[in-house]
Image (cartoon, rainbow, N blue to C red; front, top):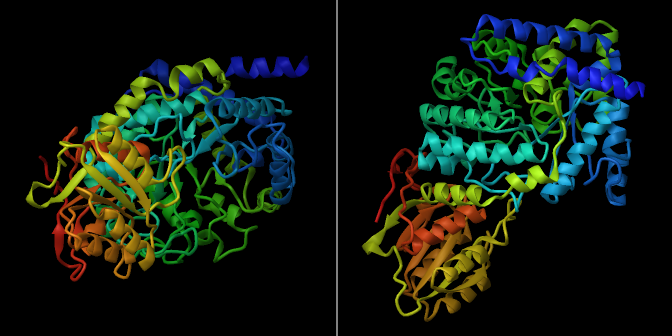
Length: 605
């Protein structure tokens, strides 16, 4: 009974937080007073916490299992091996973590009702702590090529596709839909939008996750997504500060270096983050990158006080939550040991410490740093206050629970799916159309062959891209057969595709990140040599066209999720107009200093 009373007191005492924290810079005196009262309530809550609970609030951790208390045995085993606890509930009771991140591979996101139940179980565990505090549940639901919650949830186009559409209203609407569906299953912090400006076509980790190579276009659309997500009740997270767009290395596996001068950073990298801050962004994620011009010490930005405090906090005036990118990534682990990384991140200016490889090591390192005076308790309380204010602003103190009824009213509903289809149509980009090959005629039941790359599908797709595209074309009146030739087709597979193309009216080839030595080039040229018209569809980066020859028409979809492939099928069939425009330049393969297709290029029928 004492627990029930303390929880009710806590929820009642902080019920006004969301409204007070959501005010604009032109807030009234009453609003300012409300925020001050809320801050005082949260400071009293912090004062009730033990040091161990305070340290726990700083961490956002992974956990295996579909249930907070009764995961499958394999997930229990994985939790014991990696974290030393059996379940999410034990994780919360042991380490008092302030947040949990969901992953598909951790079996957290099987279906919407299961996700909602998991979220509720996590919140019950949080409110059962000695000092009851709800948890902030997060995930990476960027859409496009990065999704953790799949069908029957609505999958909307990803960032570069939205950049091709160029519509702020569509971009905001896509985020509203995505945010509403995340909130319905209890996920109230989304690690999106990507605010990186993809100025390097060879970038291995950002690419189509970026809106554009144009900083101002990226800024407009990043701000639109911030407003969309947060109007739906979900904290948006602009990433990866100070900007991961001009790298040739992937920070999951290496420590990239950005060689921009301060002036170049201000011109190329800063605009989307400035726009996100102006839009009221709740959180910003750091990058595990080195920017020598911003920090001569060559520390990763996640651990750099000159970057996070000097630039983000002081120069840009940001006082929201700063979350690290995953502390398990190689980019942040190369220079310092795992026990130093979380301490240095806090000293640099971070608030949330995301997914350390060894939680016990990280948690105890921060605890020891506070006890021995390296980090003051007042310093971690600054971060805890920001985290609690964010939780309050998103309604977690008011009511942290979700319902199956709310899921059914929100997730994957007809209006959301229709909006996603409409938006996707406006992002599909027609790069080339020799002789007016597209749209394909649907007279006399034309026969098509769909071949190409079938990369691992993002969550929620119904099958390999070739199969999805063939099915969509069949539903539109074609007779379409699918043949997966893979990302690196063998000559035997190319020969099989050439033989299958005989007697077809056209061949559709899905291409995926075509390089100078890719056998996908041979596939396209040998299919073209048959005399059967060839349509290429770049299902990830739009740069593929520069390395291909012999095709009659070429499309870019920027991802291979169902919504984008179905839209491409409608464009191929003439059921939709290709109105997308390139948000990045496509350079010549033989001379990268020359632009083959400029930003803004896109043909129509």
